[in-house]
Amino acid sequence: MSCGRPHATPCTEIVALLSAYVDGEVGAQEYHLISVHITECPPCEQQEQAQRTVKALIVRAATATGAPGAPVSLHARIRAQLTLDGLAGSDSDPAQ
Ligand SMILES: [Zn+2]
Image (cartoon, rainbow, N blue to C red; front, side):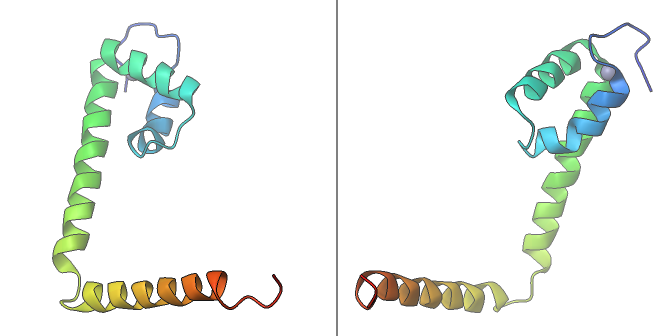
């Protein structure tokens, strides 16, 4: 897929990086290349929008279908673990 116009970066490279781009996992230089590209290349911009939509749906689905109660107990366990770690790190470290 291509809009037929020449780009500094080939569409195939842009599309390959879009998932990481949407996740904010690309470097500053790649981020810039993709940002410029999608402003001048409608097909790639559509791909970028689709990536964002899919990721938003995944997040919503994961939130909506989580077993009721599971997040709460998980939070409690994590908080308890953090508290234990905090105490061990500050009060009861014999090596210090
Ligand atoms: Zn493109």
